Figure 1 (tube, rainbow, N blue to C red):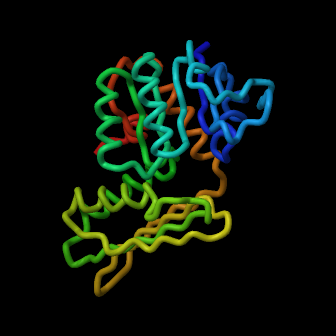
Figure 2: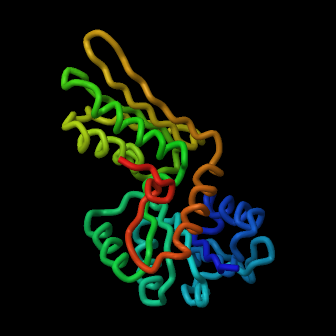
Figure 3: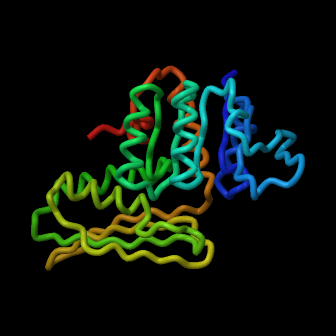
Length: 240
């Protein structure tokens, strides 16, 4: 059985990844990492020690990381140096940090995606199809909504949607409306509008489990890979 490490294990996503990984049984959760300020004494989750030390990942095959850009880059450097595969679900990276990820993928395999959900990646595919099929007379606008704790705006998913639309059609996407309210997990809506009609595609996340399950699918995808940078579209075999 492959050994899995989870960072940000006491956060919303980390906890769900841990629970689902244990239930799934395809990985042995061997390391749980968290920021030192979030650890008290001999901290454990589901009987597994929680550590602030990256050395806790020794012997692990794959790391799943949903933390912050700064923390993810530190984890990336350790994984690169110790040949640990990596699934990165963190968003908000700078262009320089994204280049660090690309450079590391020459040595270790990485799944790096702004959204790990199967449904959202189908949304990307639908947006690409509509962008290509609609004439230039259609204007494109977008709204995204998340919980009040989310720091980056627009969301990484919204940025990926906008990039996908523009890349495949040349259509500019109007200013993205970002809403931060309550405990919204994630809503994304894209509107293609002409003088005669509206085409609307939308994704609503009902539970964080869609992202956690997707991250585990991505981790399994990496097992036979030796290097390379992949997205969830590669994992799900969604072709252009």
